[in-house]
Length: 281
Image (cartoon, rainbow, N blue to C red; front, side, top):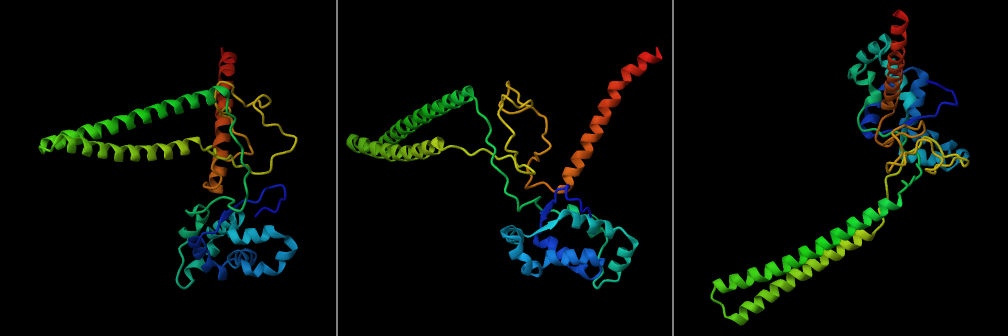
């Protein structure tokens, strides 16, 4: 495991099924890994040192997380011959395949103890006017549908009462009663819809690895990645931004970085191919 302070510590949530899978390893792991795992599985062992670290340790213990580096160390150890012998001699025997890829165990979240800031998406005046126009059209459509429902229900009731040979005054009264009930229902539904439409919608936040520098300006006019022809920035990925950081595992981040390196290498090879062909001619 890396102890470099420049490398950010990545934690994943310690789910119940993950803790149950790791608990049998306490007696067969190497001493330094077993000591770290024991502290993670039994957070009360670190209770005496909590006042010296402040509320961050309390929050970390309440969330129940496990360092990703510790899972990686356990996964590497599980691939060694010593681990295979230790697992086969355990009672009951443990499967090496269950721990060689323990970092990919489903049901974990990356850094659940971190509080990511809310980053609002800029909205232009044209988008606001377009959204208001769409809302007005929907309101008119809702009113027209309500009127058609009221009139249609009243006419249908009057016609059905006529088929039963009711008198004219009873047909009119029943049609008005049904129309009034439908009108009250439509009015209630419209008020609920209008109240929901007028509420401001909270946009999805962008999760960052670290805090935003105070000197950084994220305005569209000074951001080189801002595309004025679209409602959002260009498709370039900021090194600080991790999409859906609460639902992706840390291993997916490393795999994505490998894919990006392979893509850049292929682009460099394809760009140098025409120059090589010209020299050959």
